[in-house]
Length: 258
Image (cartoon, rainbow, N blue to C red):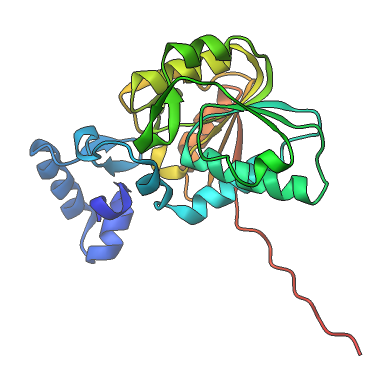
């Protein structure tokens, strides 16, 4: 179950295995002692070393629905005239997909995107200006990184930045899997009016390798899904962070009229 979902709560395992909470907690303790899981806020997750090297295609195939709901919610927060930064995360890519729909529908105008991602090469360039930051190609991540990337991002000021996160700790620390990604995220945060962190519930309460900032104050909005730990979300709100839980779109019933 951990390999499939990446994160579990006590309740998840009690329900799946039809056993007691005390037994599940004993399992967690034994597995933690063997180094095959980590205790985190609200449950357990795979240890960092068990997650393997980041690969964009593999990550894009995980929690697809949640990422799409989050991406749609994020895209709907954009306004005409925005100058935005997209990082190379898979959830941020979903925001870009829904932004393309809004542009096609002529609901937004004059959008300018700066990104280090290599996945926005189809629909979006037909409807808005996209600047690639340049740098060294990381094929597994489908992005650009390095000193050229960092130097170029400092030339811009953004109304909004959209960043993914591999971990959002209980104290609000944002983190990712590698230093290049964290340095670029730090630079983007220094040059923006508003920061939107797109992270599904499996990332909350967890710390990854390289920290890049902290959720604190009105500059930050966290967009997550309906499975997020409500106690943890309340902690973020108490620190002044705007928190949005993205829900599936409402289906409209169309009745045939006679």
